[in-house]
Length: 160
Image 1 (tube, rainbow, N blue to C red):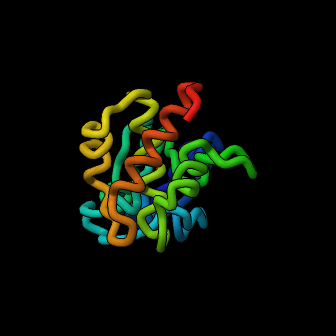
Image 2: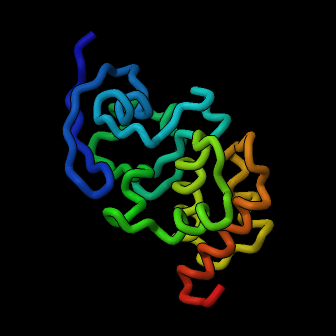
C-alpha cells in the first residue's frame, strides 16, 4: 500500500513525513521522527505510557493513526522542557521521586501538563481521576499526586 504524505506540527515545529495508512502515531513519533520519549507500554490504549496531545487533547498515540495527524498540532514529552530548563512538572516529579523505571513518566508528565493547563488548581480527587489512564507499576501514586500538587502550586506562583 502506498505511503501517505503528512504535514503537521510537532512540539511547535512544522514536520512532514511519509507513513503507511495503518501506522500508529506512536510508531511515527518513535521510528520515523526519532522522538523516543513517548513510550509503548501496552499498544492497546490501556496504560497511558504513550500519552501525547493532539490539538491540545490528551490521547494515547498507540490508538491514533499517523495519517490522522495531518494538519494537526502534536505535543510530546520532548516539547515540555524549555531547552535545558525543566518544566516545573518535570522538576517536581524529580523532587518528589515520582518516577523510577521511566516507562510511564513521559506519559504522566504530558497528562499532568494537559490537566494543569485546563485546571490549574485541581483537587487530589481530580488529579487521581485525570491520571487514572496512566498506569505506574513502580512508584505508587501518592508521590505522583504530591508532585502534581506541588507543580500546580509552583505554576500558580505559590510558595511550596
